[in-house]
Amino acid sequence: MYGDWRPVMREVAEKFLACGILAHGFARVRCEAAGCGHEYLVAFSCKARYFCPSCHAKRLALWTLWLEETLLARDIPHRQVGIVACIQTHGSRANWHPHIHMIVTDGGFRPDGTFVPWPAHDTAALTEA
Image (cartoon, rainbow, N blue to C red; front, side, top):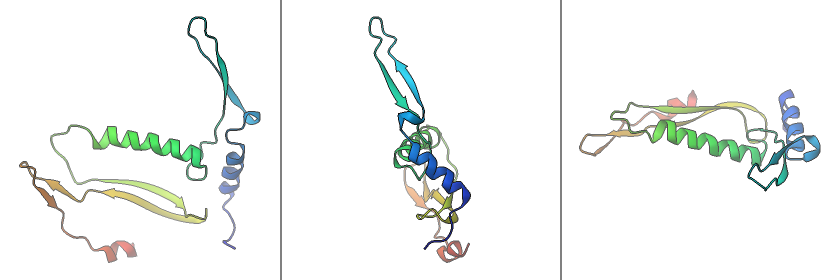
């Protein structure tokens, strides 16, 4: 219906099917507090981005936190025009569809706090690219 899957997709799907299942591997966690000794098992995860909702949500949350703390929320006295770009190699049906997602600055602030938008860009040229 949608064409053949790339070979990597079979590997990702197999990891997803084993994700979070103790029989496929786990770590034993033990409380080191005096007198406690409580233990529990944590199943290994597949760590698959996009395909596994659980693993993707965790990685996305960690990446968002890193992006905010490392790039966006720093107290820097100056700024430059900037772009954060992420490459994605597949579409919503797991088909081969390489493309880029971007967060692009839309302007800047003057020392008095006034926002100045960047000049309009040619969206038709971006669409063609």
